[in-house]
Image 1 (cartoon, rainbow, N blue to C red):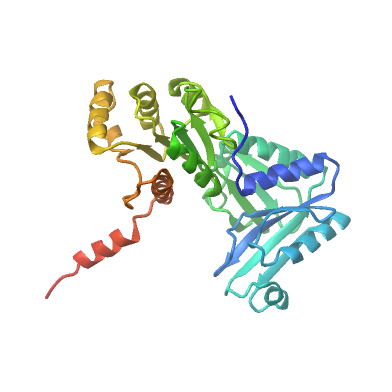
Image 2 (cartoon, rainbow, N blue to C red; image 1 turned 180 degrees about the vertical axis):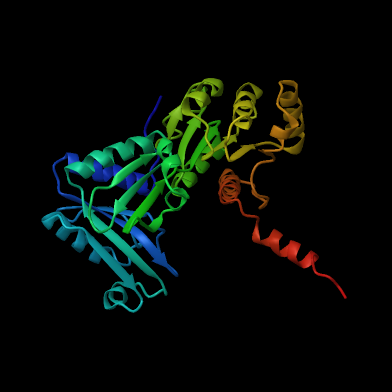
Length: 351
């Protein structure tokens, strides 16, 4: 199995891994985190920026707007060990100077990764790698941060366990609660031409992508030079990889021996998206096979086929765009704006 990862912008999980790696190399490291936003903030609450003592950095807290100021403050935190709390807004001279003139405000907490925080960071990275929900509670006025695993959530009060990252006041202290959930993942069954384009696009959109295909002529490093390839049959690979609510499964081969086992497993799981390539006639035959193998009508209602948004896609790259757009839409659980507008216009009452 080829375990090379797809090239993609570094996400927050990657930032945390880099921070741990730098610290274990003996470098001084600080971690900056967006803890509060208001208005048109360029990065969401919980976003990370790791900085080492030489000024190397990974991640972003403002999409470039205030990074220079944060990096300087992070180096100061590395030097003296004291945490920093910075606020930037349109009224701040610093914010105007670095370009945060979009009407927003962000607050950033910075702390040095000392020996105790390295232990917590390592444990956090293990939980994230295992795709287990967890949270870190950081007292902003000083004190040890705490890692909470999923089993610990039941003991929290409602304010801390509501699943939203943000600032809270608890027992007289101001805390930042950062919830970490499994990142979006895409399993592509079938190393076909569409998969070549889809793998690259999905990785750029932040998905962790794996190509599953037992056919060596298709699933080759030459055709997928930067992809993670799993050359097992889907009924072996998918249970081992794991199918959770943050996973999308796309089936592309047109070969029932490969497609059908993958679909049976995906439709029986909590995957947020399951789609299959093929015409309506192909899909009708597929449905009959799946019904005969015991897949329920309720489960079949989850299957997106023909796959992708209807954008008149023709080429493999265009089809990949339509598939990824539908996956992103499903993950956001929002209807298309056009459909909402159509529904609004048809609901008017004529007097």
